[in-house]
Length: 436
Ligand SMILES: Nc1nc2c(ncn2[C@@H]2O[C@H](COP(=O)(O)OP(=O)(O)OP(=O)(O)O)[C@@H](O)[C@H]2O)c(=O)[nH]1
Ligand SMILES: [Mg+2]
Image (cartoon, rainbow, N blue to C red; front, top):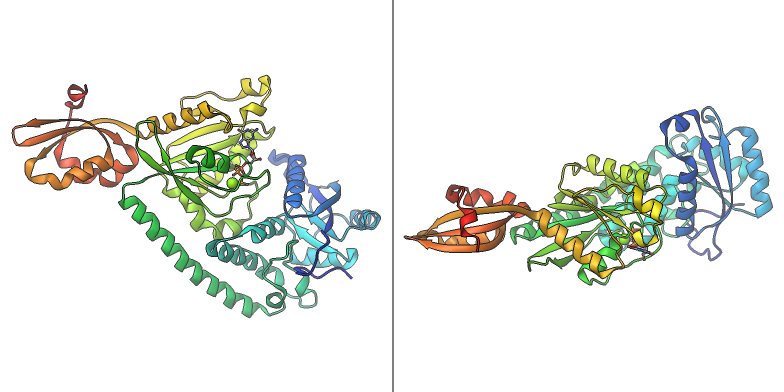
């Protein structure tokens, strides 16, 4: 008998064979199945699974009963017997029926890529928000896969880790799961509301938000740590960061911005997970500036950048001001370096080099600067003075009769939020003269 899923007493790591199906559709999509399988391997390791072997089948389309062909299933069974493997991990999503049929023949745990990612998230979620989001994603994934069977229910929806929705919950019926989903959504709304309030307060304080986004393992947390001297978790693992962390970063001109580290992206990020983590991912959406961190040393750099671009578009953050940070150039060969695209909003850096960090701070300062503007503030409107300091850096001020004319180096993010208060007092053309 295979172990039940979510066996909390298990101390022996699972041993797995990875399975990937290359269909005509995959071949035409330009999607690289070998890389995807390599990534699945890393995901499995991250989840604490020992990978015994990999099995690949090329086939016109998936088999409706077993996903891979029946003959291949038997081959897989022999392979698993040889290695004494108790788990098969599929690189593509399986239907509930396929999982069930495979389980019958293989007498083993059957997991797909989505479940594996959900499982890693479950192992790593630390904050209340993270934990709610993961459970919500797991149950949402599980629900349609419960249809029409009951016998093997406890095996379904299972992952590798020890912290899934819990066996007792899995044994209950769909109605119970639906009720739980409703409950989690309500809790999440509450937490999300808090996060929004918190963010609104930061905005009211005039804090400029800069978000580090990028593919998992690109070096976002390393950069947050280096740029702000924050104490955050950095690991050579996928999905080291689940909960966004924010720290103050000081720019060369003295201005402070809030820098936020976010959850890493990955190709085929499970839809349910994106939906559940929306509140967290929204951090990117609220940012005034996005720092897109890229692992320049990865052979899949281009594909990873595309994935990140697509997810940002989905979140509605595709048009935000962005700086691309090609990170880890210390690991790049000369050929790789040469191939990196150059551009005014792209920097080639290593998070490990101090001078590069200064380049980043300078680039952020430049990008946030919206140019010089002047405002003629009447003596009676002293209440606007703090607003002036909020929208940018005060470069100069001079008295003119009863008014004070301020020259401000506008900060784009803040100006969008508070500029309307100053608009009636804007003086066109005069800014340059005031500059010393
Ligand atoms: N050589 C080198 N290694 C780096 C550099 N930046 C980050 N790393 C390493 O890359 C690995 C991943 O770094 P993290 O900062 O945890 O990556 P992340 O983007 O936060 O990853 P997730 O939280 O998993 O999405 C760690 O082992 C870092 O030490 C760099 O510039 N050069
Ligand atoms: Mg991280």
